[in-house]
Length: 179
Image 1 (spheres, helix red, strand yellow):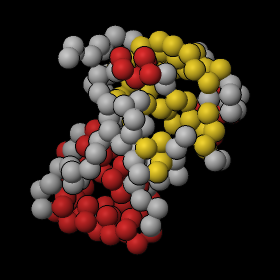
Image 2: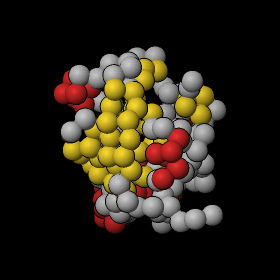
Image 3: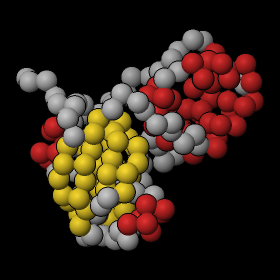
């Protein structure tokens, strides 16, 4: 298998609604040009708007981009809106948004500050993904507890979950982006 390019990946697609959420699904040829089937940090340009983000795996060897409310409003995106993109893979990962439950647990375990800070942003993304990859509040709470315990015991990554699966429980079924 040939090495994946780190050159910019350009293309066009359409925004897609899944329930109440909006995403940017990448065409197959764009996903196959990315260096990983899992998450990929990129410098992105969507319809002229530049930002750093992480492209998410769809569980089918493809990828998609998260659209938050601010981006949706700024670009006037709705289901079916055309999107021109340029994605340039980078080794510089943006910081993940830490969910409030994990943030509170890290604050309570004040001795973990240096440990958490010593993790790469990519590793922090993995912890956040693993914790968020469930709909069940009890499972999520348990994952937060287990994360704190693992970090106390020197673990730098969560358990062995499929890094190429879609882990957003609102958008996925069985690790695959909903059709």
